[in-house]
Length: 302
Image (cartoon, rainbow, N blue to C red; front, side, top):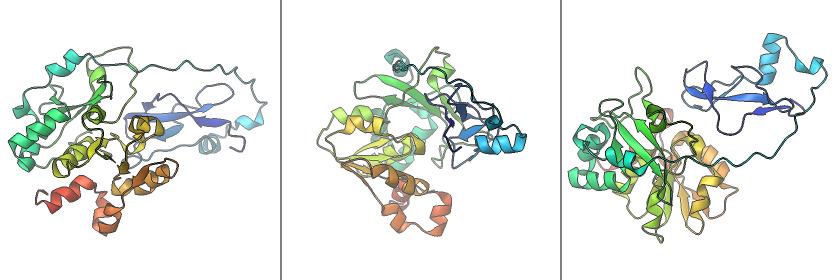
């Protein structure tokens, strides 16, 4: 719209996407009333796997209901919102799941790649736990630099291939939702952020997935490897803890342009193009990441 009357809702609130049926839809709201345009008018943040995006203009064209035919409603007074404080998980909850690694599919696969001793070292360093939510599932805890637990992401991996299980549905859930901890304000930090206090001289490398950070740490320990836990989770706010550190971004093939554009406005952050230079057309079609290349070059690819 010419006057930017409609914008995507802020604050991290998400709704059920009508396309992929995941709670990942960010709705468009009317800046004058603060109300959503409609339940299905918004953008799914699963850009690569879903891509649903219905804009207000498309919705009004399809429905024949043009709000600009009527007088503008009175703009709601805009009060400065109170900053929302993040919620935290009790340490006892995390400690209770730091066991049963023989039943943990991701850890079993990690043992195939690095051997049991090194795999358990990596598991302990990144505080990967075992969940009962799905048999064989893992918990990837997000622990900030102050050792506070921002959240725990439960994911299920295939113990033979190291690939995430996405059929018959994408096996991802959060600990606070499973345990029905309410109210809970999830304010994510970088996965592995707690490792920054152990060695303040090492350069920092940032990838997208938790798995990639752990695999890269096993093969290239010269960096502190962190993960955004999603292509769209890279933000200046999350990078504030990295002030004074040398930071290199290693985006997946599908995210290179997006992360390179982001880095233009951030000092002391560079973007590696190693995957772009090595990628074949088949690699690009698959959207490979750094872990795929490291596993391939070290004879660990499936």
